[in-house]
Length: 486
Image (cartoon, rainbow, N blue to C red):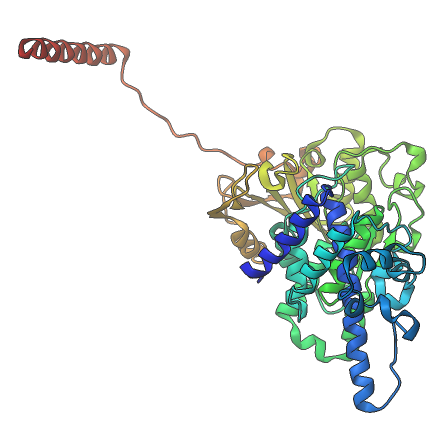
């Protein structure tokens, strides 16, 4: 858990950028990310050098040699502001060296091609370098918490419906999905990699013993986590987020999942965790043709469902956040994709979330679909839950409140065999397949939930008039008494 002192240090870094003329939150995070990366490279090499000296052997992997010693964090942080600034700006200087790291610098360095150094003055650069240098990040948990807090300060929505999924909602999906030892976990629109990071943290918290197995450690660091993102800035931020959480070499791919060839994703994942872009629209000729064979549509949220079905292995699970319109839309495409998931695979649950969950980014109502790819059907009873509270107020402030359905959702989801006795007036209940088919594959909770209206009895109008007359009489008597007193 991040402490107040650490928050204060990060706040100072953030404020320095804003007062220094950089106001775009994504730009601030990206520039801080570059500096964190440079500090991390130097710290890694220092550890390797210490090992090599102790054992009397050559260092295994060096990010810097004698000629580039001035470019190391431990060296340039002590220079005067102007000299440091020139080292960042000059050809073959600090920033160029960082961009040329390639595979040597891990997954983050692989996506540095279009990185741009945007700190405008020597004074600002020196200020933020010294502030970052003073932040204690000695272990995986602290590093991860620092970066998560930094990401939480991004308070503006991106383009094409992109916005940061709240961390507690991500964790709800992960806790319900319960990642397994052999899983390959995919987020086809990974952004800052929140879902992948949370899945990794779930494993650390619940299955630390798995890491005693070298085979699992290799799987965890190289093959377990797959992310696809078409925004280069977000991909770099996501890569750093994963590295700071101890996931060394995840498979991150820079491309548009919907427009470019994605045959390599076919039957790739055993678990998909995603919050794909809402409300986007593509021309048919801009959509990868294989997806249109599953659902012919221009809507990105429906196309991502088709992509997820393709990417899952048989038996693979999915937890995906979608706008409510996907659940009840009446177009042929909406019905086709719902029918595909329900009739040809196994739909397990629908969790309806209130519209305030994604504020201040957006007020759209959303739901989470949980399904398993079978290719042969298997949907029986579908479990529905009507979330009314998530532990935060449903306005733009999103302040902490006592009401929180998330623990109840997780507990009931994992005990769905006990849910069949619940009535449609309760917060959760099950609906049989036949009823969903009869309702044209409609998955909106309001289609099935029953509301009990309490009868309220009012006094007869004549009685109400008598009461009013009596009140008038008493008022006049009180007024007469007051006049006599005066």
